[in-house]
Image (cartoon, rainbow, N blue to C red; front, side, top):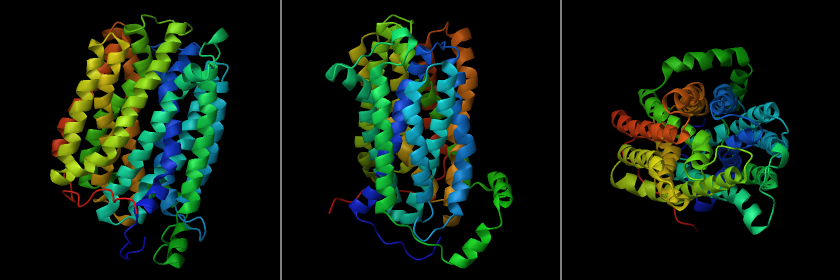
Length: 445
């Protein structure tokens, strides 16, 4: 990457380069809110759900560092460095979103989840490095906050779509003969179209800085993937100290999040709607209400994305992340105590605050400790510590739920909350190289 001073970008330039995340989160939100519902409708048991969800973290484990390395070593005069991956990933992800609700058997839904998650990661991974590429350090927190804003906005709308289709437009919400409800099916169709359109907006409205010496860059890039694979493996021993410390924070943060995504539908159905029958109308109503709950936490995160940098400027990024994770953990654990569906929206406010910080502060802290020419690679490696806890959760949460919690998944949510609180405590041990942030998101002009 060129060493010249990067120009400050306007609000609308930050907007354009981040807008693709609106569609990316549409895909993730539909996946997070509806995958367990789809699996259950097609016959999956609560004990097996974590294993079926393993597709998501395993694809991330494989795809993210490889795409990060490849995007670091790609350059095209028109497409640039990161945008080819935005483009290809968007086409594949939109295809998967159209296929998912048409799954007729469980194995098909699991296979499509592999395709969907891998495709979304192809688009998403370079977006994190995109901020480091284009923004000078004083605007990087603003860039990540803008991404978090679009993540929140996309997730709110996507999470509400099944409820909107069934309650506003009268689309069927029943799982007739074990098929996916039309309300979910149409939501995924809309999601696929929006994913493609929003990512293409970023692809065609932004540009990228060329390498400082294009000839040398291309010569290095031709050395081949074997060299790249060796660098990927060796890079684990060269992680900055800050990255290692953040890895522990991420590990316990994402155990909390993954438990929520897997088990909220079954927990709410059992604890509030008093059913475990995935074919029943009550279970499908619980699925819609979980979409509303997820819309709340994502909506809160979209608003908090612009407030967190203000508090971080006044205190520190570490302190803000600590407080947010504790609030989120207490909120997630409190679902165990709630038996009325309307009150379930309250803890989602706390979860949304934590989610905003998880999507902003670790990446902002990390970006200041990374070499610019390895930004994509290290961001990919850092995401190992997002997917590894999900794999651990997939392997262990079903066993823990069955053998220690009597099959009551609401207790698993409480465990996830405790993990998030622990992550907050571990933030105290992170070394933030850049210290306090220098500015917040610029005003529109």
